Length: 63
Image 1: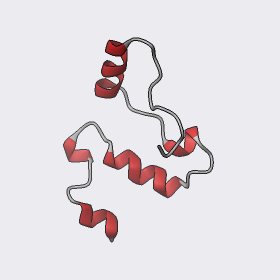
Image 2: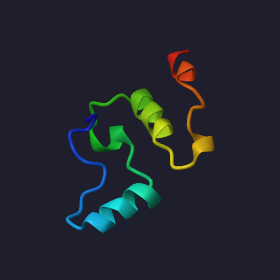
Image 3: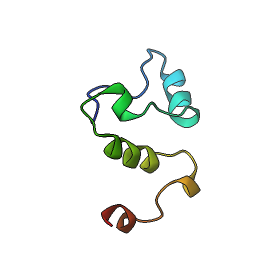
């Protein structure tokens, strides 16, 4: 929604699942230049593959 397009584009449903599970998505500000870098960084941290790389609570984002 932030960039106006899907993170991974492919016609193969299994390839799309693989991409969401295994690939690092592009940064939002690299896809859509109007997205501020700080917003892009917050989103990237929220969708990190490893749980320990994500924010541990929503309160951290609000600070």
